[in-house]
Length: 168
Image (tube, rainbow, N blue to C red; front, side, top):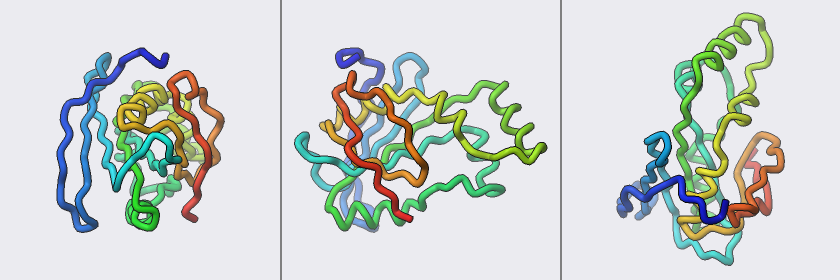
């Protein structure tokens, strides 16, 4: 897995933002053509435990975001944490959904079943995200998450989650 290449760097640009200069990377997923982004705050060194926040977007998440609280951590909180620590990575993953999963989520809304994104978590391709972080020079992650995170086998990619950081 460590040598498997499923992404390609499309571009890397430096941009001036209201919080300072940032580097924006765009990666193309080779099998699907999906485009994923990473915004790097500060300097990233392989020996550091790097603070990372992942945002994963799907059609259903976007369509119903205004209706339910999906425990999303506001980006401003994440950016402030990166500024405190002088580094971090915001990773935006575009996720495709199968029609049957969209319909299942809609049915759960009707039946008042929990509106969690557990099934989305199961269907994500963690390997693509791991490869993006490796490409950025990350080996050890401090993952910002407000949800319990199950252990994910990322060691095969040369990546390890060292800590779960809550901003609540």
